[in-house]
Image (tube, rainbow, N blue to C red; front, side):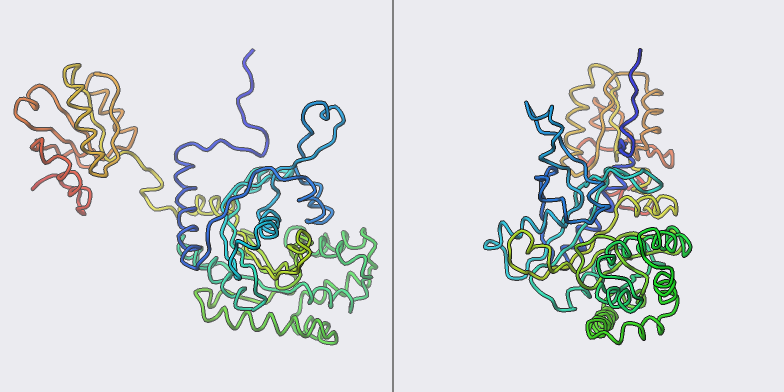
Length: 443
């Protein structure tokens, strides 16, 4: 009986076209993050379980993939390791471990997979990549403004124009919950429910809030505040912490207007961000009708959980998978990424031509061309058909006549044009013709 060949639910195989699209986006992200002074970092897929638990809130803890103890301990059902849930908590551990080796202001980017035992859905998987930037060591609003600028730069470089960077502050939400009469022990539960507002709507959040023990009056007051910014501001203004937080948000937005994010930033009172480690400004990138493409915020207390030293920190994570889904649906990838093939397919005319054909392939590769050699001395018709399937730009033929004349026949698979080129100048001619607007092989 044949075994099932599908990957585990929520996991995926990536075929060549998929990998090319992913790499294109990752290359853009990496290039722009480095332009902003962020340095690369990688951490292990597995972390000690105590590193992750207690950092994400009750719902986050449920989604951590735990790994059973090995050896004799396996039978106990206990777990001592876990797959990385995000890239922020591992970063906090790294900073606590290597603080003496890092600069005063440490800026890092990290592009790696994470795992969550979540329910798979459109654009939501159990294994997925995050593209993070974080800045450690400063509480200045310049940090948030630079984060917003960097991710806005990335999205615009990828072709997005209709995104909005929503900004809020955890202290504003705390002040709003207090003013609405929500007891402090229920604040965490309230934020988890509020974070689902765009997904389940007003009625769904109201039901969730009351199910978590929050009174109907308090739930209604919260939801009403989210629908009117002036009313929200009046509600939080009575709290000194709320007033300071509103001033911080205003400053961040003013600074962001001096960056590539200008015109894309908005204050969004309903933005909550469900993770429990956020302490200050929170941010999310959204597109109408699509949802979130990423988010982040300030988490000044997280590193202190590992080091005992309070170190200011702020980060932003772009969701690679959601970006890829939207770009694919909208046809946003350049043609060379959508359907990429070798620059040249080298055919094998007969067995006698194999050594010289391999030498030709080597010379073309040395010239920086992408070259594939057809492995069998098949009929040329089959080799040309394969070149078409592979979307090759040019095909070379090196038969006995060509070898005797010191030439190579080259066919342009786009135009059908064919020409005999001097053996010594093949690489030069192909490179020049690839760069020409019409990809012509003529002198």
